[in-house]
Image 1 (cartoon, one colour):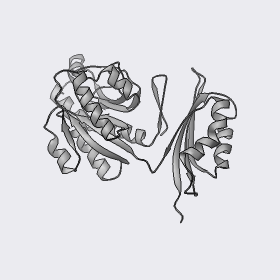
Image 2: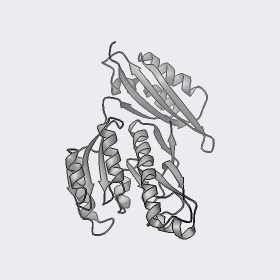
Image 3: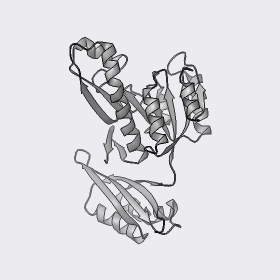
Image 4: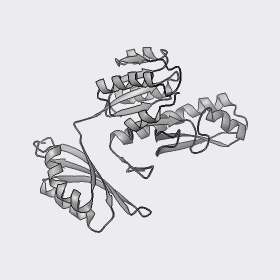
Amino acid sequence: MEKTVEAIILVTCPDQRGIVARLASALHETSGNILDAAQYTSDSTNTFLQRIHVSWEDKKVSHASVQRALNPLIEELQLDVHIRFGNTPHKVAVFVSEEDHCLHDLLLLRRDRALRCDIALIISNHPDLSSIAEQHGIPFHHIPVNKSCDNDTEQRQIKLLEEHDINLIVLARYMRILSAEFTQRYAGKIINIHHSFLPAFAGGKPYHQAHAKGVKLIGATAHYATAELDEGPIIEQSVIRISHKDEVTDMVRKGRDNERTVLARAVRWHLEDRIIIHENRAIVFE
């Protein structure tokens, strides 16, 4: 069977009649075959959002040729269009501190090809996890952080990210706050895992907060990092049940499996271009 070329197209525009038909027709004109399409309309903002998975038998098809086919609709329908071809996997940087469970999970999933990406480097404010990076043959950069939002530290990080053409940063229990300038620079490209069911128990030591409140459920939340701490668009969440018998150490132990699973799902959906950020909400096309 002749190999095909595939792409994911993400579309956002003011809602109106005929959008789906017009887009399908334009892609048909490029000899594209729509493998899958999902859409959502936000009634509160009158906005149409769609994810389209397209294939072509013509290997000469390109981002430019598809863009040209969509250009008349872009102006007429006020489309915001993002096109990514399947032969260009994301380049990922993982930020860590001392906790290793989320890092291990991401690296194993990448090894097993359950995450289609290139984990190009690991950046940490502690040296502890360097051996894990070495086992997987990934460059490890220890950049101490004396205080959160330190400009000199972030400039060193940014230099590495630019050198490796990074387009996704995963904060795998990176226990430092990033500056507003950093998060704005990589807006929509930083995924954080927070060990609580946001918006409950935002900020530091959420398991301690949960224990003090005597809650019966604890959770994990994967979200895009923004200038406002733990306020970014939520991608995925999950909870597990606990009881009055559980101390903070029990919550930490039980929560780790939850954290790694939630983070992995969020990262995979981002890598597969299943997410559109709209009005500080992550619209996820599963």
